[in-house]
Image 1: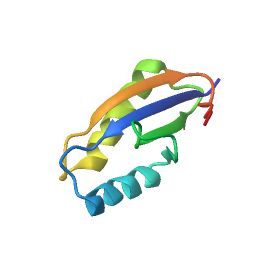
Image 2: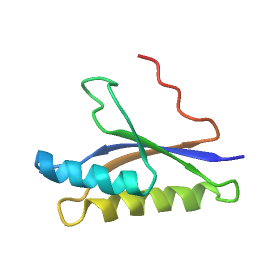
Image 3: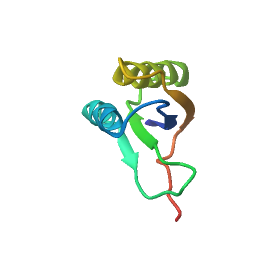
Image 4: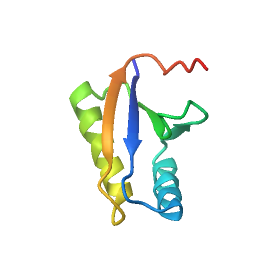
Length: 91
């Protein structure tokens, strides 16, 4: 069963062009940005990990990818969720 990782990310002290660069890097790593979810959550992402990846490995990989993609601009603030179902967006 595939594992889905959801990340709510903040990129403190970054300019708009820097955030766009971070977003592009994340997209290159197959992260999907969830759009139009509301005022308090402006940067919510998810990715699907292969069936053979366990929770701990996926959580560490997600953290590393967000930190790597944010360099040299900032150190991101992250809330990471994991589950076996694709995130369901209700707006």
